[in-house]
Image 1 (cartoon, rainbow, N blue to C red):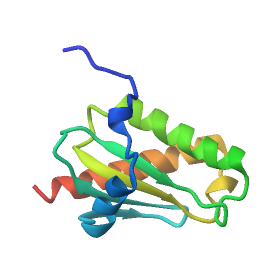
Image 2 (cartoon, rainbow, N blue to C red):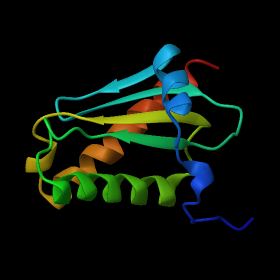
Image 3 (cartoon, helix red, strand yellow):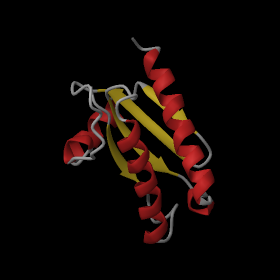
Length: 122
């Protein structure tokens, strides 16, 4: 079986309604001091992600974009191992202070924690 490593629009939460469904029915959380992942199962059998990185918590657009880029890259490479969840990634103060290595480790750890907790639902 060939693994697909693309990141099409179908793997993104795009509309306010998509975000609202996650917020109204959060079934899995993965908190840390730098970020919070909220999730609920979806019907697509693929993980979909949306981002909330406010200017209040992450001042510079360069840093907000960096966090999103690293997270999308992790999801793109590991989508086959992740359960079908709609995920909202919320950045907290201090996430922009992490260097690349620590940011990658944080993202990996949070998604593994989310996957483990999602498996307990089934």
